[in-house]
Amino acid sequence: MATLPVTLAEIEAAAERLAGIAHRTPVITCQTIDRMVGARVAFKAEQWQRVGAFKFRGAMNAVLQLDDATRARGVVTHSSGNHAQALALAARLGGTQAHVVMPEDSARPKIAAVRGYGATVVLCAPTLAARERTAAEVAARTGAHLVPPYDHPHVIAGQGTMALELLADCPGLEAVIAPVGGGGMISGVALAISERAAGVRVFGAEPELADDAARSLAAGRLIPQTGTATIADGLRTSLGEYTWPIIRERVSGIFTVSEADIVAAMRLCWERMKVVIEPSAAVAVAALLSPACAALKLSHVGVILSGGNVDLDRLPWGAGSAA
Image: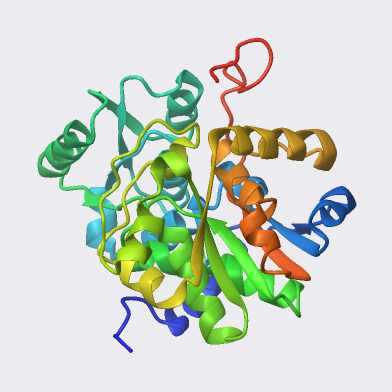
């Protein structure tokens, strides 16, 4: 088996590092959904993590490992969403300055939140090339250290800490379903679970309109993301050089779901579970409800609810719908 870029020991060290800083998020249940799928379902509620998403774990773990000289120069990243807020807060707590490059079409509440955490926001054209170029320019001008949104061992290790909590809180799980974007979270989760509880399978969940992980696993090679039309905006990124090897080795399969199923799952959680989750988190719920998952006949399943940052002016149903 290939040597992977992150170890269980690094995830365990991240858990110690984050103790008392990141929230130990609860596991919640819903009898209605249990009846719908014919299984006990444990939802890991990362929408109640600091900044409203799991991304804080990885960003904080990365910032806490900076040496004094690097920390004094600040940190930089490019993100339109949860990682932007996560790094902004992590930098503030870690005593450094964050520079966050955001596309100019980012949601106004997200830009305001990043600034509210104390970061300097630099707007750019809404393309990946512009984001990367602008982040490089900021790094060159300020000396700031780049903290990628997902493709870095420290970020992956931080995200994997949620799996240690889930396993401790829910003995007897047969499988865990997690959404897949760039793969930072699922790679950390899959690595931790495969090392701590080898009999528990980890499955990814992706939109049909952004299914690069499913296509990559099927082909046995990394296939870049080309789809950006999905409502699950947090899952539009490509797998990376650190995340792909872990996913290839430790993820059992990928469920893909339609846009209609994502919206239905999101609404189900709002209405029946009484929890606000964002579309990217709803992808994992939609996968749980899918015929492909039902065919596995699982009896005890964990599902990662990755975040709850929603643009309330653009809900995918009713007035203001963007769907």
